[in-house]
Image (cartoon, rainbow, N blue to C red; front, side):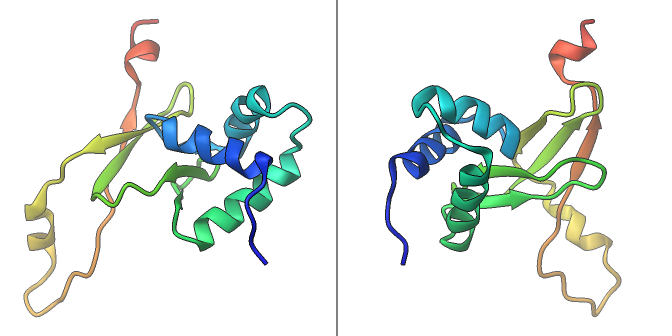
Length: 124
């Protein structure tokens, strides 16, 4: 049985208001400011429920902790800052990328991840 709790509401609010994908740890740190006493295990349970219900999306980037983002229903890609390990959403897409597949191959989806330094880390 799925029911709304104040703890899950806090997790939802953090994800929905974030401009970038967050780790469970980051979500926990922000959500416990909204709901004191919130445990990390509760955050993981809420994230499991939210991803199963298609409200949140798991962002998996090789070599990085799992990140989560609010499902906004638009195609986009990601940028991983190799210094601070934060992940950022990139708007838009290079649609010609599907043309790289050999003829007679059918591309169903693609993922593009850029690696480098975010603005804050690049200035250091």
